[in-house]
Amino acid sequence: MTDPGESGPLGAGPAESADAETESTEGKGTGTAAGTAAAVEPETPADVAALADRIVEEVEDVIVGKRDAVEHVLVTVLARGHLLVEDVPGVGKTTLAKSVARSIDGSFKRVQFTPDLLPSDVTGVNVFNRRTDEFDFQPGPVFANVVLGDEINRAPPKTQSALLEAMEENQVTTDGTTRALPDPFCVIATQNDVEPGQTYELPVAEVDRFTKKIRLGYPDTEEEAAILGRLTGDHPVDAVEPVATIADVRRARRIVGEVEASEAVREYVARLAVFTRRNARLGASPRGSLALIRASQARAALDGRGYVIPDDVQAEAPTVLSHRIRTESGGTDGADVVDDALDRIRVE
Image (tube, rainbow, N blue to C red; front, side, top):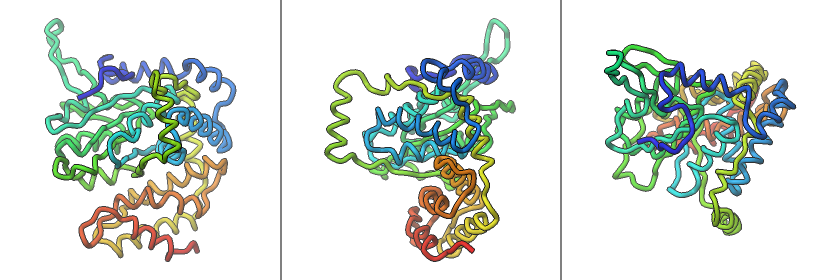
């Protein structure tokens, strides 16, 4: 089921209307975003780094002590990917996703995955209009810039598969009609890992579409005390101001795509992927290699560089490759395999 209180174009009409709404607002911004975008539009990796710093600082007013997690989200968005967050309930996964969406002035939708959720509840459905004797398409919550799939593994594989086309091709096909999703489009899905008897395992094809997989973890004592202090009144996420626009994010993504990844770096990534295939029942796919290159480009841009270095690859590999690996014992955590690959494979 969707959360009717979230922002975004759900119920605004066909997908074309949702896109038009995005286009009409991206140049205007709200509050801080309009002034910031007018002052500095991303043109270089240094500008991307400055944009990322503004977003991180704004989100850190809500998410205490999780700068690395916020940066993982930004790397994912800039790398044109999607994020899987596996953790216990109540550590701020929803707040993180909503805060990032607000900080870039993007539309946000939340889908609570449940065993009775249908694919059409995610993608949308054609509804017969008696006045026109025609079917009108009512877009589902997937038509937003940031889509939070909460506890995605509580829904059966049939419903989970509703996201496959959306995550890979940024489009949705219903009743033979294909509709483009907003640009940018990012799925942030959470996975419940404490009730295995009441959840479904994610299909390998879907797991492979997530650029990164991270955990937030519990806060320490000081961080939790700070959280309690901030939540005694109104929720701080309501105070998050946009410090960028959707247009800024689009430009930043184009700049990230132009960050140089030399032949030596590309070969390094390929050899890491081949190592995982030779040392696990299922290794990283070429899609995983591409995700690692794009994430490394984004990491370089966050450092203000226009080129990728091996340190970028090594920083991103654990969160980009590990979840794609299946070990010989049947386990789904390939972190040890990736660590072994990083120890043994050298840049040539």
